[in-house]
Amino acid sequence: MQLLRASDAGFEQAFARLVTDRRESGTDVARGVADILRQVRDLRDEALVELTTQLDDHSLGTDGSGWRFTAEDCAAAHAALAPELAAALALAAERITAYHRDQLPADRDFTDAAGARLGARWRPVDAAGLYVPGGRAAYPSSLLMNAIPAKVAGVERLVVTTPTPGGQVNPLVLAAAHIAGVDEIWRIGGAQAIAALAYGTENIAPVNVITGPGNAWVAEAKRQLYGMVGIDMVAGPSEILVIADARNDPAIIAADLLSQAEHDPAAQAILITDDAGFAAQVEDAVDVAAVQLVTHAVARASWDAHGAIIVVDALADAVPLANRLAAEHVELAVDDPEALFAGLRHAGSVFLGRQTPEAIGDYVAGPNHVLPTGRRAAFASGLSVLDFMKRTSFIALDNRALAAIGPAAITLAHAEGLPAHARSVELRLQGMPNP
Image (cartoon, rainbow, N blue to C red; front, side):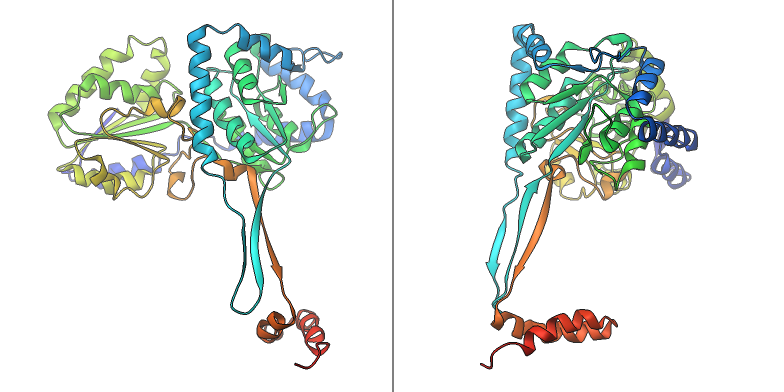
């Protein structure tokens, strides 16, 4: 864990290294993924069978029995849930649905001063592929966060791929699929699952958009296949930035930092505070809390390798640092979070006030928890309904409108050396009856 003080002479250099530390896959992963993509593209189902056996110790089988979960499997998993789990998933689904329904864009249709009818209409993609991790942990919350926006957008075919190592699956994932109305669930993971969704195989029809978090191999597969399909983002390890003053309980802030550190050894948790004594208390609290977690090894590795505590002279000084970090999650655990929020330009999601832990956003708040990482919040947004939709513009001209704007189009077409463009307008104008 790094301890940085803004007043130290070497702070800028040390902070710049923190900002540029990408913590993501290298060329070896890229080459390995490219090889898997080629195998699935060329051999299709044969490659999926071999790779799933090799990497997940799961036999898809030749009779189709090991390939997918049925709707009955999902319904049974949901029926078997403990009442409190069923209620929690239902609450999460209800809140996620309400928040994303409010994101639906409106079509436009108007006539401008020249008499041209202009506008745009929004339509969903035909099919969406949703990746649900199943390795280090299984995340029914991720299934809800990906499937519900697609459903709200109006996508007709929702396809989930999830690895089942050793043939095992978390029944919560199947229960969440039942709640979200998923159409297909394939027992395939890793880069090969992304390839199957993009290229299609004998068993799996291709999709238009692929979303969902995964490991470095999944993220790299999405990156390499972007353009053949749409993707939500190239996501990296989780991040949290907590800006906190000394009026917080150090144990609570430590828990917030560890909530992301426990995801992955490459995850990053950073605290910025204006009180050196409080910084020391949080550091001690992290040490105490980490050993009590069943995820201790992962959380400790993340904190030791990528964690940081930054002490600034005033809390206002944290805002420009936060904008440079452009973190996935930012907590503002201060008396007046709105004052800091006003200057915060780059963040995946912001949690305002001492009683708003990031973990609430992971499950039941409503906004999506699939968020940009690796400083990409400087130019990207979290998953939304719009990731499953596309906009088609339209134009309708009558004689008056074409006469009003057509001559300018002719002039520009000639200026660009495209005479056929100009001629297509000129012939129409010449054929018009005299006013």
